[in-house]
Amino acid sequence: MSAPPPLPPNARATLRSVFGYDDFREGQAEAIARVAAGQPLLAVMPTGSGKSMCYQLPALLDGGLTLVVSPLIALMRDQVAQMSQLGVGAATLNSLAGEDEARETWRRLRAGHIRLLFVSPERLAMDGLRQALAGLGVARVAVDEAHCVSEWGHDFRPEYREIRAAVAAIGDPPVLALTATADRNTRRDIAERLFDSPPEVIVHSFDRPNIDLAFAAKDQPRRQLLDFLGKRKGANGIVYCSSRARTESLADYFAREGFDAFCYHAGMEQRDRNRNQDRFQNEDGVIAVATIAFGMGINKPDVRFVAHADMPSSVESYYQEIGRAGRDGLPADTLTLYGVEDMALRRRQIAERGDEARRRIEGRRLDALLGLCEASACRRQTLLAYFDEASAPCGSCDVCRGAVSLYDGTVDAQKALSAVARTGQRFGAAYLADVLTGNASETVARNSHNAIKTFGVGRDKPKQAWMGVVRQLFAVGALETASEEHGGFRLTEKGDGILRGRETIQLREHAARRARPDRTSRGSAEALVAAAGGALNADAVDLLAALKKLRLEIARRERVAAFMILADRALIDMVAKRPTTLDEMSAVHGVGQRKLAAYGDAFLKALAGAA
Ligand code: ADP
Ligand code: ZN
Image (cartoon, rainbow, N blue to C red; front, top):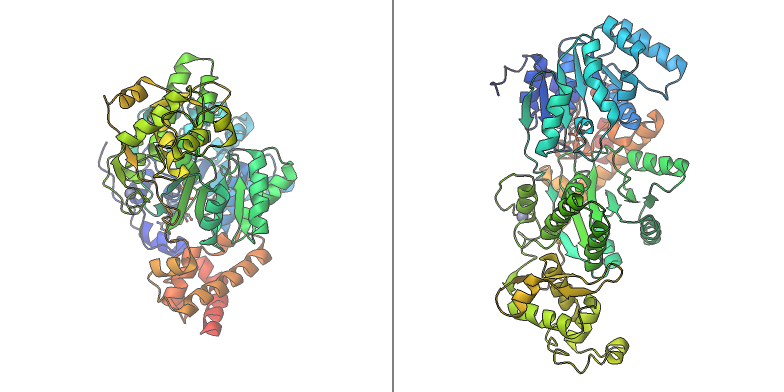
């Protein structure tokens, strides 16, 4: 890869005057320098790293037209609204636009008033549009979600394969491809299918240091979730569930407990789905309880937490889902719950796959996920290692915070494995734990398992601890599911090895109820103000609430999302800096010229009124 050309001289000034930002984030300066110099570029950067800036800023520097290919109409509309808020000429051509809107867009395009034009790949496949664009002259093309061109990625879209031909047809302007998908095969596919010669490549670290990572075995999941939410009252969040029914029952439960929560899944009426998605996008203090169908069209920057009520389906999807938190770079929290039933369910689903090679790949992916759930080393290190990235312990995940300690669990493992063997290799975790703790439940008695040697050998530990031992034995492959239908376990060769003393095993200490994986909320108003360096007296929090209220009023009046008026970070910075003049206001994060002119006075008044 060649050394990057220098940044255009007006780049930094434009970043401040239009966007209100003082510094580039990692990777942005290099990407912008290359794009502005007309180099073809593939930028692999995680969600929330600020990929859009890599084409937004160059689009403002030279007066040319930037074409942005993006797969989702909702996201295109959002970006256009956001650009308009910044005073930047932007438009989208899509199937939902009426004739008048389309005519107006073409008028502005011909007049040279548009810097960023967003189109879907389907649109770009149309000859008429290609000819019109060739006539206008396109300075560069940005392809968002570029992994959609690859069958390796999980979002393959055949229309993406037509983009290369479209670019050639409009005069072959340089291409910038953007994606948050890390793996090598996908990257190679993008380079081959969107470019005619190898592009420069920038790969950003996949670490999202502002996102806290925590996992917990399901104990009383509703309680665990309620605890987690309770510490984050008033913050925006997402709770992912594995089934539609569960999103509905959990959303009801949270609403009854006083949270502004609603559900979202693919089985809902389109209208209700859109309404809930809009609420999430536009309002503050809302919680979406959703299946993984929720998220693609969401770019809310101030999501303060993501919880998984059930184990995610893979490390990739875990990373993508938690990545929706903290896009604004401020602290955000995650909590992932997992249980032995989740693990067994996934194993059964994989076993049902017809094709042997696929089963092996999926099996390995599941093992990686279980390894992360039961990790005894830093979660972040484990996660990044999965993406081929070496790192040091992070200091801010549950494991680093000391929520997990290990001990030589060989003897405990032998007790549990012996219980499996002596009960006939067909029972689940709860049953085995009853036998181990000496609880002669009705079924245990019926099976006469209160008479076996292992009965009660684990009285020294609570039932939950034994269930944890069984789960860990399953996670490391010492146990496997005994049948496709039931949740029971049998020994594997590895399990047999441990039972007979040929192998030892480290286990995680059972964390008592009190030691919760998340001890503090880093996403609360107090924590955010403190993180921003603001004076943390009681009225800082009240002042922030007052500014948020003003923001919501303006957003409703202008019919745009609250975060499009000003980001949380801007409001927090105002609380910290307490500007009293427009000049001082112009130094606040995220306040560029257009926003200063439009909202500066209103916010100064609110700040003065509260003082
Ligand atoms: P991605 O597409 O990589 O997920 P976005 O482009 O949506 O991320 O950017 C995420 C958030 O970061 C947006 O709110 C954006 O305004 C903000 N952002 C981008 N660049 C900067 C920067 N240099 N300084 C501060 N905030 C930034
Ligand atoms: Zn860590």
